[in-house]
Image: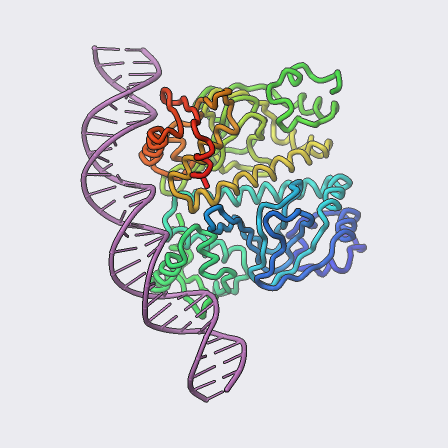
Amino acid sequence: MPSDLPPRCAACAARGMALCDGLGGAALAALHDIGRRRRLSAGQAFGWSGDPASHCANLVSGVLKVSRLEADGGVQIVGLLYPGDFVGALFAERSVDTIAALSDADLCVYPRPALEALLVRHPAAGRLLLRRTMATLAEVRRWMPMLARARAEARVAALLLDMARRGEVAGDATFRLPLSRAAMAEALGLAVETVSRHMTAFQQGELIALSGLRGVRLLDPVRLAEIAG
Amino acid sequence: MPSDLPPRCAACAARGMALCDGLGGAALAALHDIGRRRRLSAGQAFGWSGDPASHCANLVSGVLKVSRLEADGGVQIVGLLYPGDFVGALFAERSVDTIAALSDADLCVYPRPALEALLVRHPAAGRLLLRRTMATLAEVRRWMPMLARARAEARVAALLLDMARRGEVAGDATFRLPLSRAAMAEALGLAVETVSRHMTAFQQGELIALSGLRGVRLLDPVRLAEIAG
DNA sequence: CGTATGTTTGAGCGGGCTCAAACGCCGTGG
DNA sequence: CCACGGCGTTTGAGCCCGCTCAAACATACG
């Protein structure tokens, strides 16, 4: 690691996970120069659907949701973003998605034109971003069979496992749900009541333990995985 | 356009749509050098899930499906590829998807290592691929609300419009369906019977006209779009 | 003409949605 | 301290869409 690493990056919690990982001194310094830190509090939006897509970001801490408003008024969450994930879209003039914080979150925000220019000057950054984007694409496709065909029980189990995998989990598999029941329903394409019913069913079946509204502990991840299919 | 364009590329039907579009003489020549033409007949696979992902390709003509086998034995189509689309995945050692031709198809096939090396030497190609990949991601996310929440009627209508948009359509909105009823069901997460029922309902409602098993004509695309939501 | 494959049609069932109400958690103010 | 009200969650009852199972029908190909 070069010693001329910018101090803000050296102390960054997402260093080693995000776009900036693997970037050499010059490219990292350039990225640092065009970026600035921003903090979102829970519920706050990073960008609305229809807005000019003027900024992108790296997510440093917290969890964001990427959602989409349907013609019938319904909302569908099309992605959850965890620390290290890239936020926003390049090349698109207007964003089709609304991005909002589910918990307090820290971001490294970059003006989109500056970031695009940086990709030209530092091809390695472009390749990293390509790699991440392809991984995101694979991630989204992993959810498609779930949303299209799986029963509600399997969807809820899969989401619990996914949140446990990507969130900050204590040693005993205890963690705080970043999503309310309503948000889980939006992500899974289910009604709130259906999510709630299966959550309590999992609790009664001693697959999970609930503490408060957001605290969860996975008691039997193996069987949850079987249910998720 | 440079006059030293390789003859195969100059005559290519997908020229101007695919990865090679917008590429300068040197990069295009390099791409040409590592690629070879391959023809797939309908039903033939380009790669199976679990195979080492040794090759990528540009689709020149025809339609491919990208599908995924679920633990319960079900199949989900996670993407349809039309001429100009990029086929396969970079960076992944093994492919999780099975890719197969729905109709006779022509491809420009590249060995994956050679293509990755080319991206390093020709950053412009990498940026083009990044752009295409982000577009694909947006495309996939467009389908998520559909698969997760929409009723069967809306899914079928949306697929018909999508196939009409991307396929080769005659002046009177007549075209040949690249997908069988079973494949449509796999793409939409529905049972074959449900797809069939809604197709005949659309026909009786004079929204579409069917001729033979694969021939369709969109009589009222506007109302179809309303139904698709 | 016969067989295989794909498509259509029918009958019945069940999972998840809808509508509705009760319950619990928590911040606020009296 | 408790009362109050707002919001998120839970629970219940009934209904409808899409799945399942089954059989007839159409199409392609020998």
